[in-house]
Amino acid sequence: MHYVLSDIHGNERRFHSILHQIDLRPEDTLYVLGDVIDRHPGGFRILRRLMAMPNAKLLLGNHEYMMLRALGHPADDNPDDGTALAHWPMEVWHGENRIGIDCGSGYPEHGENSRYGRLACLRLEDGRVFYSE
View (cartoon, one colour):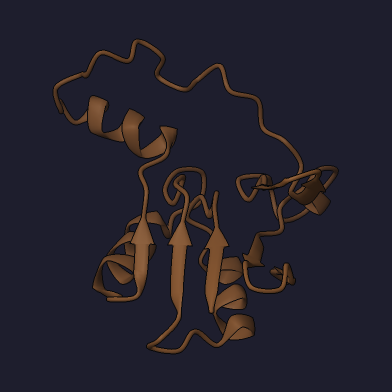
């Protein structure tokens, strides 16, 4: 199976909730579409775990890009540091010939915006969506 996940933002509880639900097998592949770090304290632990998983493929998101720039990594030709991007509520949406996945796991776990903080993971074979607790 092939799974797609994004915008973990260091939230270990929600990340582990997704991993438990999808029960990733060695023959499966998990694609993480960036924004593993920032906003919650578990980002580096999650990054290290993903890097150790032979069946996980990780793309850098704008938050990783900002971290690399802050640590002195040479800037590339892209002048946008990602700070102008809006934070959308978590959702998986379907349209004609396309599927999108986005979430706001950086939102607080309690309070007015807590309902936006779930992670969403999409299984590509059948379009099933898994939401973190």
